[in-house]
Length: 104
Image (tube, rainbow, N blue to C red; front, side, top):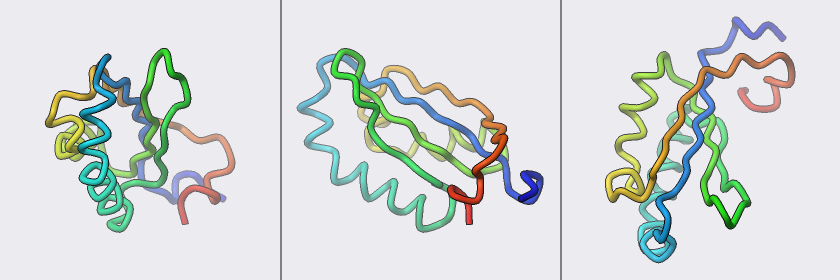
């Protein structure tokens, strides 16, 4: 499978603000609806929590044109708007193989 046949992919790592667990629990339904919408539009290929109680966060794989578009898209995340994401690291992900399992 030719990686050039697919749009740019970005790996986004969220690191949640310390002490935000209760607020995240409250906003989680809105956060999930936001992610479901991105997924339904083909902009979110995958997402999920990073299992580390000492440094809670998440990993998202976003399929849009540029890092600026990724940031603008994720500015709409209720967790971001509420200040529950301390760090949001956006990096271009150049997949070597296995892309067919992520992007259809």
